[in-house]
Image 1 (cartoon, helix red, strand yellow):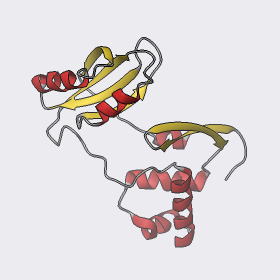
Image 2: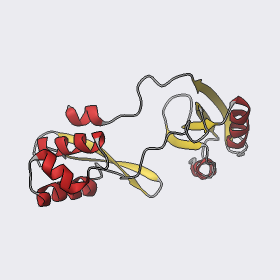
Image 3: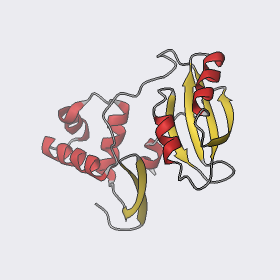
Image 4: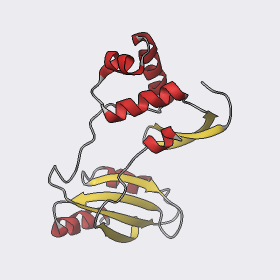
Length: 175
């Protein structure tokens, strides 16, 4: 681990993400391992050690370190909601009744399968959610379910027409 600049790292604790400062969590070998896993998620530790030219134990210890630091959060496959029958994606900004802390609304939207993410935000809204639906009529049903909570004061929804830059983290690793 290099010592140098401090970085802020966000980790999931329960249902809330916390940000902590830490030294640079990865070096060149870690970055190469992460790029390799991104390119070929099923490569395995032995395959990774061969591709990187390091001992199997080295690859395993680096992988364990990256998992322990929270850099690698999951080994689960990335699923495409459109391929699962949910081709409509939208983002909704929710304004929540002040003084409630938002917890009950977060619990409410967490129970809606079509809500993929929820983030506390700054600005005119309090919570930004990403949601999916089967079609526009189904999107209306999902929005109606989201805003049915009595603490949701107002919502504003935009439909995603296309994804120009998909979720990615590898450029951060390469930096």
